[in-house]
Length: 522
Image 1 (cartoon, rainbow, N blue to C red):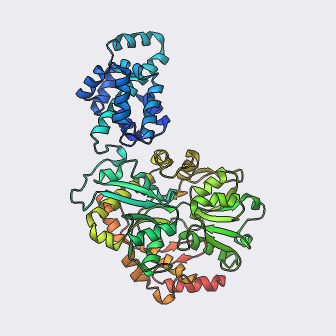
Image 2 (image 1 turned 45 degrees about the vertical axis):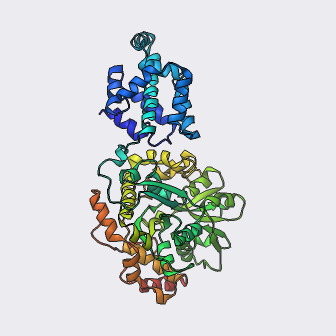
Image 3 (image 1 turned 180 degrees about the vertical axis):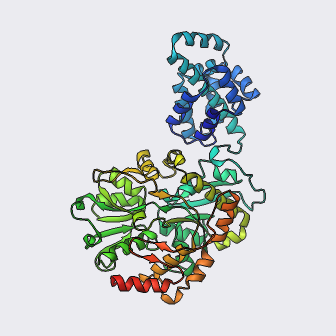
């Protein structure tokens, strides 16, 4: 198959995905072979033209029949798919033009004329053939779905011993959820034999409560949440396992634009109202860590309270918060809307810090061990794909759809590519603004637990650091799945973590907390 054929399957022109931007199709058309024979050969190799499809096309003589076939068999009652069909037909100059160019008896004569008429007509003819092939392929795909063959999900065989294949995974619409979310439109779940759907949740409290109630199968969680829920911090105790990390870095401290001339460091936040997504979040711990270095008591000198990430920009616009440490894309969205500026990326507080995770209850894992492994493996596979900078544009385009992040493409691309405006007139280039490393270091679990103790969110007598890390973070399993996928996970399970203002030794978390309190009197 030619590289152009690979591009077609990658870009999602075959309707297995169904949610793709118009520019994907333009790029495809421009990259198609320049002769009809090469073009048709590519389409046949891709399986878009089958004998029955060609026969169907030749038999299409009535406009009503064609439109009924397309809208009924391909649209399947889905308005978005029907709109895509109409857009494709309009691009080709009408369904008649597309089908006649690809299958009509005068196709050869038409093509000869277009050569004489110049490159524009030639491209137009090729475009019509491409549209026709796509429409026919969509008809075949709607009637007999096949496993995805995208480069994104290439390799490996779907397991056959799954306890269940229909899986629902809850998520919050933020870029931290990228591997979990993109696995649906880009085919990673399907690759592992799963009919998985991601379910948008309103806030982290809803995620926690839904997990305890067993409403969905698995969840996108903040990395401290499995620890908090398992230990009964802020809720009933309910065993949750952290299976893999979704993202590292990828957050920011964003300040309302009205404070741009006064906020230079942590001491300048005194008296501020500050939004974080959840009490048991890296966001809460990192803003407290930062403020304390400037002599600000996070419990008395400022007000820190939970704000659902999708509400954060509106609250900043309304003046209800002065600053926030939020997941993206909402920091970048605040800049995009002209209401805030990025004061600091969290990677500058702790390079490689965890944020979100894929998690499931112990009960669900015990009942569905093979399905759990398949879901986790799909997400770890997707994380590696998303971590490749060459794939960030493709991933951005998959994420922006309404059922996923529902954000402007420039905002999501700015986060994933690291090329962004900071709200102060500067263009930044930080390629590792966000990363997707799925390995759940046990030192992450110990640092999180140390901050639960430091800020009185967990009694010190519950802080069995070693047991928490061993029982809740499934580091060995993640490493095993990474190895199966050809990735190279670390051989160690924990490491010394270097933060902006100190160093965390996971062998002695109690001493770390003591030193923090002594150093900053907090």
